[in-house]
Image 1 (cartoon, rainbow, N blue to C red):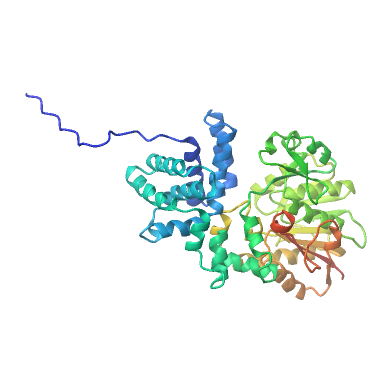
Image 2 (cartoon, one colour):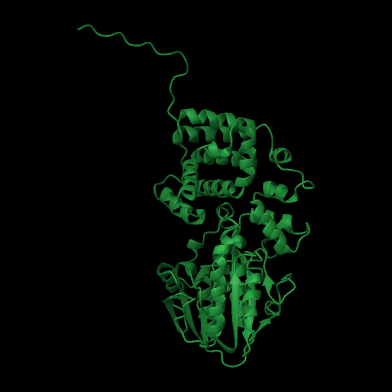
Length: 472
């Protein structure tokens, strides 16, 4: 049988295998996990980085770049989506999510980093060839070349409406927040332009890693002996790690004698511990203790006074995290898995009670940037009954003369003052305690008697705290 003639090759460039870039592939995988599984980047990224380091693919610079690409893309997603939308001929909802992730990574490299434009485009197109295929890589190339024609300021002038015409939408596009979040934060600040742009900008900054030295187990001086460590701003137990500081490298953290805890969270625990009581000070309750940061600090503070801490958490796996955080506490404590709205304790059993209630998390958008795109206004209605129920139970758990701390990592008025006001209407046997004098070194805490912390003022998460004394 005669041999068939070979088909002649079409003229053109020879096929080139796409070049795999471990850093950008990892960043893409992290963004896909956030989108597909509703995961949080701060939970997804560390194991990916650890696996890459163990495989020998990454060094410290690679890890830093991957982290910047993931968090930068998530923080500026709203801005970048508006720019991408101006460069494509279809609604963004018709662009496949994996393509949008590659485009987002590319736009961040072009507009949010010092990576040269040609390198940012080239690396993003190579990533697209690896994870999307040649066809969609051409689409990515075309879009990013359009984006590269201007800088961020130029693009914002084009895609953001003028402030005078639509201030909320202007701020939403420029500072990459959903419009409803801009409106809510603006209301919480009291209206007026003062502060709102600073707050939104602070939400887009990378937060420092803050450690807590748990009293009786570690000292701040010990932690300050670590490389890249500086004192906290407000808490006597806080130490900040400058950029590049790794908590896992700190011996006291590995041993559980210290932990990673935002300074705002520390201040909430300190304010409750410092609140004046009428009567004994022997039994404390953390009614929403997971994952255990505040419980560990409260337990250490209680131990210094010989007081007992009961840490209650509804979800068993989170109760396990609380137990781990409290392991080694120098004083008496107990961890239980229980629903705070269906108390496992008798009424009036405690002298001090903390309820750090579940919320939208709008006060921690620096740490969980994807939350701003995941949350919806209707989520407030879902949290409202639980927040009120937990506060009512806390007021029933405290004895006459004791104090309840209602805390939440959200400045939204529907989750803060509205909850406290509604519940206290049903409890005339209570008084609000002015919380501000309990943190005398911390400025600008609001008009009182409750207090509100802010990222742009205090460098903390936007924690809210109201202290309530049971009077009868």
